[in-house]
Image (cartoon, rainbow, N blue to C red):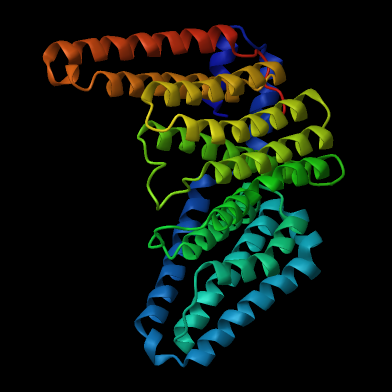
Length: 383
């Protein structure tokens, strides 16, 4: 907070002179030399980039076993610091533990690529990802405290299952996958949603509730993104493409996993917030088979998308998630704009069509702002 702003508050009568003096004294005592820190940061970054450049320039001249040894030693050093110095690092700064945890996990992931380069081996990407998850996901789950660790766990899982699905269909070359294979792949690709009930159950039982809340939110976002993408695929009629999941049974399978995950969240967190989060995940699961039925039907597919996000907005109102409600309103408005272009593709070729589209966009934007301001919860509730 700047001294100028505090002085302005006093000038307009928001605070008295005594409060102004206390605020100024507090800000002076707790001021941080950001410019000096920036200089130190730039210097450290320059040194790091220089070291990377030196290693990169001489990469082929460094024996592979030596490089692997140094890489492995860095991983071991990171793990040792986490297990034996976590309390001391956390006392200094919780972000220090989080940064060290994330860097150690990243070193573990890159180690497999380094290993393949040294020994000239190759394998489907999902295999090293699966090994990395087995080795490092427990560490991230036991010590993670913020978005980076939660995103590493869920993002790594999503990456792994979709790499597996892609490799199992021969990278899109398999023209006629069996129904059994499609069912299995639908089940596998839906599995990351299972982190939602798992995280919801641990939020009240752990000393790191924020981490589990973030992991649950990311799993919910994955479910909503999958359902939204399914409606998009339906609107352009691509479910008939053999490179995508095209069998209704597989959509039902993926939807069933999401519905069960949503019910799990409701049981794990029986309050209003848990019920609404579970309802959103379950609703996303129900959208999947319905999206298959709306294939190549522009208006029904768009209506299904908007119904999903109207449900999210209603859940956000009930749970007092102000930010989620405003996001849902914005997404619905954007989909209406896209739908107007889809339905008026011929008119848009003319000047009158462009004018109509512009007026429609302005009207939708105005309505979205009014709805968001009028109906958004006054207080942000915990998701």
